[in-house]
Image 1: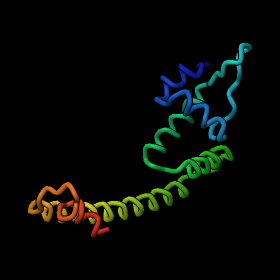
Image 2: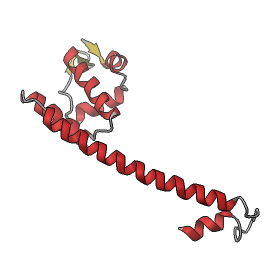
Image 3: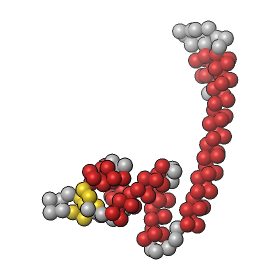
Image 4: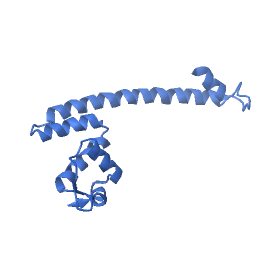
Length: 134
């Protein structure tokens, strides 16, 4: 059994995050010592590690909650997780395209700004160019 500080060390999550996941229902309510301190078992730590790993892959908490619900019902979540992963890949690919467009636009503006003068009134400098582009 682990107190919240120990659970935090074991899982790499802050105590505040662990309490939040408990309040959100992602982990069952912790047992309590007579002094009111939360205590967690190995199953809780495994669940917290899974949540941490899924969050590192940018899965939303709602999706993680559903994956855990599959497990809690004794059903394999594999097909659901594969679908989530496909959606995540598509989303990341779209964000990459958007970031590449942004990078290219910034490069274009930067190149254009190389020839512009410094201007405290911002009427002929790069700041004016940025405002005109928006």
